[in-house]
Amino acid sequence: MTAVSSAAPSILWFRQDLRLHDQPALSAAAAGAGPVIPVYIFDDETPGDWRMGAAQRWWLHHSLASLAGDLEALGARLILRRGAAVEGLRALMAETGAETVHAIRHYEPWWRAAEEELGDALRLHDGNHLARPECVTTGSGKPFRIYSAFWKGLQGHMPPEHPLACPDSLTAPAQWPASEALDDWKLLPTKPDWAKGFGRDWTPGEASARDAMAAFGAKAAAYDTARNMPSEEGSSRLSPHLHFGEISARAMWHSLDRRGETETFRKELAWRDFTDGVVMALPDYADRNGREAFNRLPWRKGAEAEADLKAWQQGRTGYPIVDAGMRQLWATGWMHNRVRMIAASFLIKHLLIDWREGERWFWDCLVDADYGNNSVNWQWVAGTGIDANMFGRIMAPLSQSEKFDAGDYIRRWVPELRKLSDGVIHDPEEAGCRPKDYPAKIIGHREGRERALAAGKTVRG
Ligand code: FAD
Image (cartoon, rainbow, N blue to C red; front, side, top):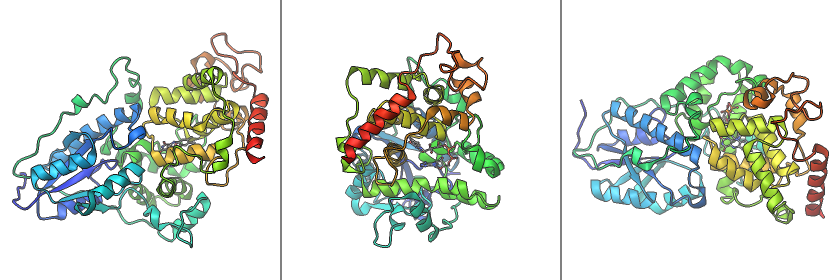
């Protein structure tokens, strides 16, 4: 039976924390005397240019449907509203008499501004990171620029807190405020339905995130080597679940405690904390080079560069590993990490196209598109960021493809090459067996490399 209270309600504001387990804002709201009103506000205004991309909208739709079902089981409802979040929350407080909003702290610059605006009414809780990114700093209190130093600094805060249990029930208000209908938000694509393949790979929602966490536990011991092999499913594939907060990083961390040492995985998991530390210190990191000298880099522009960008987006560069990755991205909303690095490096270095073009394409296409993770990784590959990575570091897509044994991966995503043997599939053009329906390379490896190095020199000089 649903409990009802006459004390003032509190609002539980969901954003990228769409879960009931280890949800400190939920636990705090549930511990209060009054009823709890869970709300999600679909906000295309506050993030400005960084409003959610199309693939994330697909995920969000299904994740909210799942969360609403889970809340019902606790005797609660998920109230859906659209518009600027701060105004929406203030309106909901006025309607319901709520005096407090509980929420998990976020690090995207637009959320930090919104949190500031809400002032004293907002109670912020930590819960999406292993440690608060602002607490893991250098001796002089500055954020770390280099990941390895950050990891060392993080050890002083580990292990993370133990995850909180999901409350058994939530107290309902005497009257629920009105909610919009999820379908009215039209988050799913219609014609063409480019997301029709997504459902084969993904089930958004907390239950599925917890299943993925358990499934990864069984293969965690092999992660160290298998994670780099695109043909294998060696990584956890938890990134969209983590991005939407359907599972917490600390739950993930502790789930592995019982399964022995998995230091490499934990190091990857901690990258999320690192990237949010970077965007906290440099909020416009997604738009500006971390090193200003790169503002002078002569990126290619104009019709030819635009045609090359399109070929990259469509997976028609003539480099099988790059094309396989870009097609996996389009078909499933996700790309293997090793291939993300190769494809990003190819765009930035071989095609000499501004990293921000690739970053934005990923933002629209990735189900895990994340402000911190995406911008920091793009600048890391570009060598334009605050870390020590150099622009002159150029990945060789063909040897990377051979090294990480991407034969089956290419066969899966580039059907034109399905019949080619392992010996020739990485570079069919060189082997003289490029099928007619597969494009020739849009740029030679050496030519692209030399052009990039020459461009890099203009920055130094
Ligand atoms: P696992 O290897 O199982 O790692 C576990 C978790 O750790 C991931 O789910 C992720 O949350 C975190 N993680 C792992 N590697 C990284 C990393 N390098 N940076 C930040 N977090 C990491 N990841 C995103 O979540 N969102 C993005 O928008 C994003 N954009 C990227 C863009 C480029 C150009 C590159 C090179 C990488 C990007 N990544 C991004 C990082 C990484 O590719 C993905 O997190 C990873 O592929 C997700 O797969 P997984 O869950 O199986 O990872």
